[in-house]
Structure formats: structure tokens, C-alpha cells
Image (cartoon, rainbow, N blue to C red; front, side):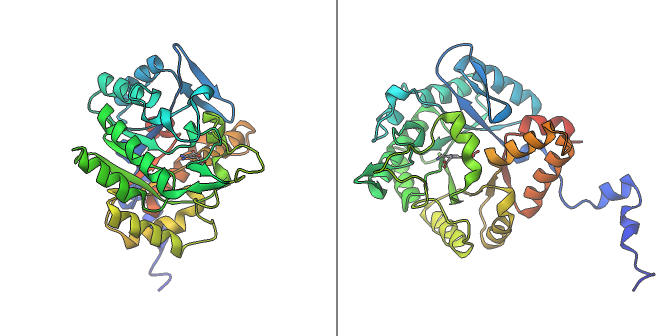
Length: 329
Ligand code: PBG
């Protein structure tokens, strides 16, 4: 009882605070999302994501060497697909010479030990900007899963270590797992976006890939028939447990900071690694506030990443990965 018990004793110096700290960030915590574009010599800043770039394959190669030198060991690839290659079926997603397939090979050639994870979803390939095939104004679940399974096999064939389905179709993890097994890719892992919310925090990402749903009277204006309602908690657990049953090796919660209650709940519930995606809108908010001088960039960045890890993240996908490394002691 106070004054015998004084909690401040454990905060009196840097040394004691370091000694009793419960959560420590290391380079092994981070997964680096990368945006790849066609062309040569291209490194273009994404307007709504300051200090973040779309890279052509030559710059991707340089970036991979740089990340490796910093101690970063895992990347998550996204591609910006040229408009004329988009359709409603994801045909280009299966092209063995497609941008994603070439990007995977580029990373593996540059640095075979770098872990390559790939985004598996149709939105960058869709004329409608949706994660699924559309028929009669509706997203077709099973037809979409079948293409995602082929896409996963194609990525595995190009050298991906993990595929990361971000579409939220029902049953796609099982369909993908079976397809990978059938083709002999028994070691290719699946990181499932298990609890992915229909969030407005994805805006800058959709700018980066030019992948926002199109505005048209016969096309759903948002992704609410497949991504989750931000109001729901039990459903996140149900989704995650089902994905694990279907064969997910890693599960993911997305976005990050506004959903840390879900992260902790799922961490307590499951025995597989839990990934958290600190999404583009979270990144943009801090960049904007720091630019205005309203928040201190580095300390807020560290605090946010620490909070995500403390909540239960095993893996943190973050656009801040390169910036945070020099600040880790
Ligand atoms: C698309 C996908 C999205 C993100 C990752 N994969 C956007 C969306 O679902 O519309 C968002 C990532 C971010 O905002 O950083 N399947």
C-alpha cells in the first residue's frame, strides 16, 4: 500500500525503464509493402503517401538491396496494372510474364533470402476496381476464388514464398491451399487477410494503385459486401478461425491502430502468427500532421508501432519500416 508501494520506482532512470520494458521492436517485426509499376527508371512519389514511391523493376532491385542492408527480411508486393490490361476476369493476373510475376523473380534474383509475399486480389486487375468478378452488379464469390487460386499458383511458380489473399471471398483459403498442394507447392505459405474491414483508411493505397471502385450505376460503390463491417468484433474471430481451419499459416487484421481491440482478442484466441497491417490512411495521417508541425513524426511513429506490437502483432506490415529502423536501439 502507498507509500510503501511506489510504481514510479521502476521509472526513475533510463536503465531501469529499459530493464523492465515489456515490448521491444526489432527489424524482424516488419513486413515492407512495395508498389511496382511498369517501365524503367521510375521512382514516383505517391501524392497521398509522402516519402513513399511506386518503383519500376530496376528501382525495385535497388530497393531490395537497401532493405536487406537495413536488416529488413520480408516484402509484400503490389502491382499497378496498366489500364489496357484490366478486365472483369483477372486474366492478366495469371500471365506468367505479368508485372507481379516479373517482380517476384526480380526480388528473388537480387536477394534469394528475402522473403517474398504477394498480394492476391483482383482489384488492381479489375476494370471495376473490385476484388472480385462482377456479374449482374454482384461480386461472384466462387468464380473469384477459383481465379485467386490460379493466381496463387502462378505467384508460387514465379518464386513467391507466401501468397497473401486480401479479397475476403468466402472459402478462398481452402481453394488456394488445395490448388497449391495439387501443383506441388507444399511449402508455399498463405498469409490470409482474415479480418479485413471495409475501411475508409485505404484511400491513399487506392491512389497508389489506381484501384478504387469505379462509379457506375450497376457497380457496387464500396466493398461492403465482402469486407467486414467496422462495427463487428465476434465476426472477426469467426472469420479468423475459419481461415485457420482452411489452412492459413498466418492471419491478418487490417487496418491497424483503430482495430487493436480486435488484434488482442484474436491473439488470445489463436495459435498462429498474427499480422497487423498499418494501412495507407494511418501512414498519411501522421505524415500530414507532422508536415504541419502538429505531431512529432518519429516519436509518434515509434509509439504507434509499439502499440501495434503490444496489442499482439507478430508481424507488422508498415510503410514506416525503413524510417523506423535507424531509431531502434
Ligand atoms: C486490395 C487491398 C487494399 C489494401 C491492401 N490490399 C485496398 C482495398 O481493399 O481496397 C489496402 C492497404 C492500405 O491501405 O495500405 N485488395
